[in-house]
Image: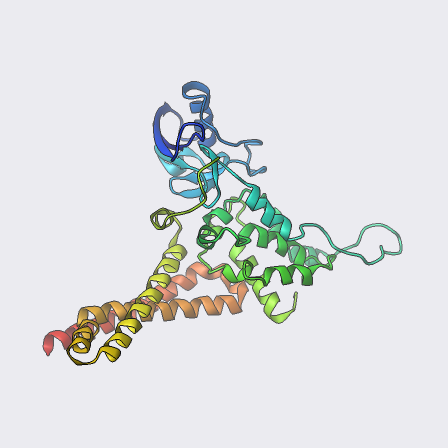
Length: 235
Length: 124
């Protein structure tokens, strides 16, 4: 089948603003959008820039706007988006070239959530693992699935309006540790999230939940963090 | 170098969010509509006289009333949904159903109200 692919291009050495370029290529309905981009880059225009790594929905490097909505290019099939495909970089992050955005602000927010286990208590008597029941593990299972692709954060209208907002991905990271029974840093993280750029900026547009390629119920996770901030309870 | 991060209003509105994003946008429009209504109302009170009556006629017009009632009712019902889901995050799993219930309630009340406003306006 013939595919018409419109891509928002930007070369910092030549352009002052982005412009669309259209490519007509042969493809199959079972191709992934990433395959189509690889085809264009390999056969038609080698100057096209985009990130990709594992190409199997695990590394999260090829998040982009496909037909107006955030997706991972490697998890999006042509048959799901049609023969006319528009590909643009994610919103709310500076575009470095074509579909590549500057992820530094995103990872800066991630780091602010103290994304590591905090536990200064002595190790258990046997000196081995800090054990956890399956129920306690299930409490934060959803939020461990995050691959930090930024599809959620860059679909959030609050983040578009204010880049200082920590964003859904950072709050999901905080959720992963706040509700971990082995962690003792919940109060620190809740304190960070109670600042003006924290959860208060979530206005439940649900774009994050819809955009997440791992189907994490992000708005629910943010809601649980909000409730923990108000009640002080982690149940 | 690089394109800046600013997202224009038109770009934001073109993002293809789903039903919840529509309610998010309408909630903002509702809030803005109410702010306009209150501003006009205050202006009419301060101006008084013929100027005040002129402004009064704008917001007492039945077309404006249909618009402002949309803003108030949608903002109220949507705000109620958001509050309930904020208080009970476990219900967020059913947010699509909650939005459907919200639309059913809104259309029923708003439809009846618009009918009543138009009937009153045209019937004298």
